[in-house]
Figure 1 (tube, rainbow, N blue to C red):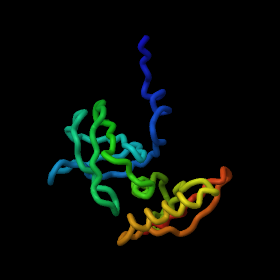
Figure 2 (cartoon, rainbow, N blue to C red; figure 1 turned 90 degrees about the vertical axis):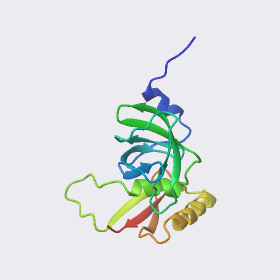
Figure 3 (cartoon, rainbow, N blue to C red; figure 1 turned 135 degrees about the horizontal axis):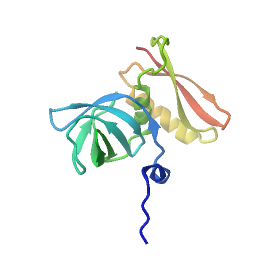
Length: 166
């Protein structure tokens, strides 16, 4: 017997957890490009909102912050929203960079400078934390984002504190 899964149910079955962003980026084929807003993303894909004329099966390039362009393929489309899968999973540092590019939503906050916190890994997983730091430093080389420090939250997760001058 067939079972239809709603979008709300299907998010629990994703390969990678989704993070909200709101960052605006350019997507395109060749030299053409359209503006798109990231609604949410993971290491394996993202959900965009755009007027771009993309259909399921179309592939395009995403201009990522402090990183070479990333190839993505449209998997589904509903109105001005569409879900895409990255050709290869992005690193945690690139995922963090997209989150760091999100606009400030709270009124009255001075955007210069801004500190953002990014979950890095479990306290006892020094190898993956070290790999995250190396990937962050590689992807941010020449950029202005810097690691200001780390903290441990109540769940023993290591949180990186990132300085983002505007």
